[in-house]
Length: 255
Image (tube, rainbow, N blue to C red; front, side, top):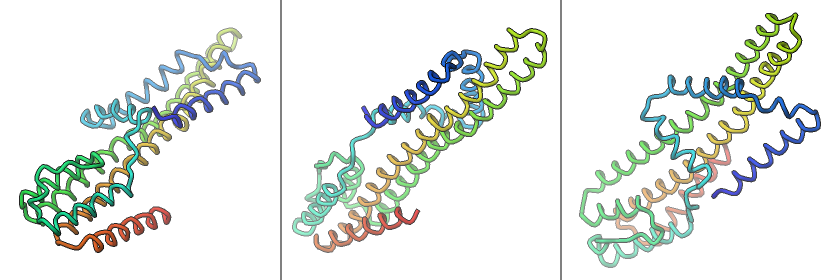
């Protein structure tokens, strides 16, 4: 389980609770009607905006937020690719038959198997690039769903506020009803802003981080496989991979 996610949730919820407790408005925090309007409306808009093939990926995405994928060791992955280059240089590509990745990288195993089977270089590299592109697109769609939800939820919060104001105007002569209406007006705004900035946007950013790491690893493998297919010596492969990672780090720093 991702301790940072748990810590963040605890800190955020705790801060909100303490402030509302001191302000003696904790009772406003729990309003079923407001929650149904904001979160139900946000989900409804999301279902309208995105096709089912994208929506069905949300459970796995939510799971990743709490149970992240294993951290990729780029140094170890680089060493493995250099070792593969050395094997090919000494024994040829057919020595890679049945290769099992030391880093348990299925993407690496898949394309090393293609190399061992003598598939043409252009076909292998095109396949790798297309798969990386497809994965990046899929990740972007899922992240985009959470970004859209972060856009929708404050709007539904505002809608709840307008509904609450209308109810207040209709019950000007009934102070008790006015109080309940104002509670809905205030709480829906709170839920909308809280949901956008504490739930949906952070989830999107965390998924983007995991996606960037996975894509970088696959691009590094592609660079290494190309070096192997060119029958380059391990030292050249090592230099090539180091240069690739340095370039990517610089590009990330510029963003």
